[in-house]
Image (cartoon, rainbow, N blue to C red):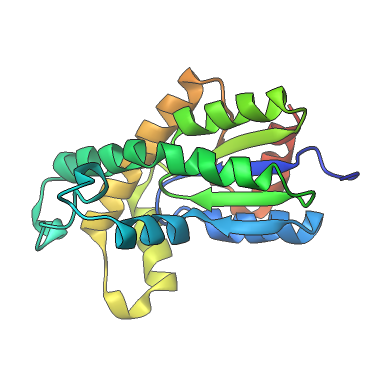
Length: 199
């Protein structure tokens, strides 16, 4: 895989911060395969029930998430992300068997799972890297939602949760020694991420 500084890169970050766009750009530059972890999450949820896997179904009985306090939604999101950590490692282990670079991106990639994946990659002689995008401003996230989901109205509550989750991810990433890259300015985001991954 000459030309890349990684065999697998995990791009984590809260909803609405630009992970998918960055992942597509990285994949295009390196001719890599993109894994959208949200697809894995949907598959896992479809195959399980709250009765047998309650940790994967925290939001099933919440009729209106917007009515919950930001802190409560954040707690549920973190709990769900932690419950999905084995699935993250499953994806990475599978990609380690394929000689094609891959970008794995998603909201539910925790720094703990990413750090474990980096460690497993090193143990198998493969270059697994991880980076977390950070957006602290809920107004910017609201604007991002409006641009990509114009028919959904202004999603201020969802954006507040996303900003809070972004802070949590950034703090956890720092604890695990993983790079955190601010989403702004956007015009050189890919370059700053590339430098972070090279380090």
